[in-house]
Image 1 (cartoon, rainbow, N blue to C red):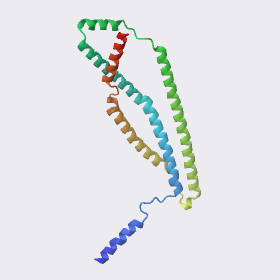
Image 2 (cartoon, rainbow, N blue to C red):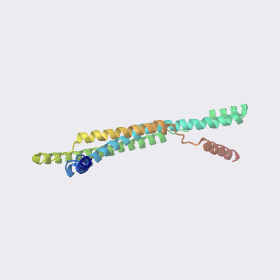
Image 3 (tube, rainbow, N blue to C red):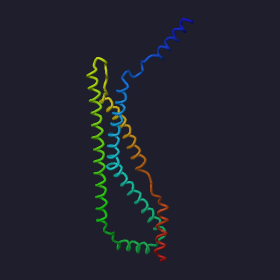
Image 4 (cartoon, rainbow, N blue to C red):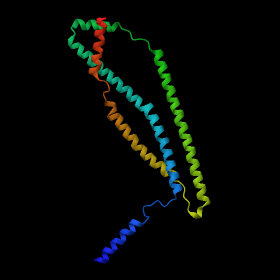
Length: 212
């Protein structure tokens, strides 16, 4: 029994003191892989955020705003119809038919030009960031690979870029899935307009207009 206990103790001591789970590569390789992984992450996530904001979120946001405005207007006029007589409703209907929407084509054009300029500027900055990061990554990798060839007998290693790219792509995939799930399952159905508050302000504005 003591011999068996002593055997277990020695085994545990061997596992605890062993380097089975230690990274056998040099500190320089681990550091450069960390820097390369960081730069790749910045490139991936900055590109995704730019595309996600301008081409996905913007479309969903426009749809959500339109749905909320339609909902509030329908609720407002639905409440008004409960208190208006048929003749008053016809009068209100006739009055709205005479209204003409203002021509905002010039303002719309200015907004579109500013938004387009912002998109172009974001694409340029993101492209510049990706190009600079890619250049730094290639320089680091080429330098480490050159050192590995010169010191082949010393078993000097260099970063595995393909493995780092795969790891970052997997991480990016989880982030994209989480963002899209949150956007379409929660944000797209969020009511960001308080219909009661808007109806109160609209009625108050109409009262002030009539009294003046």
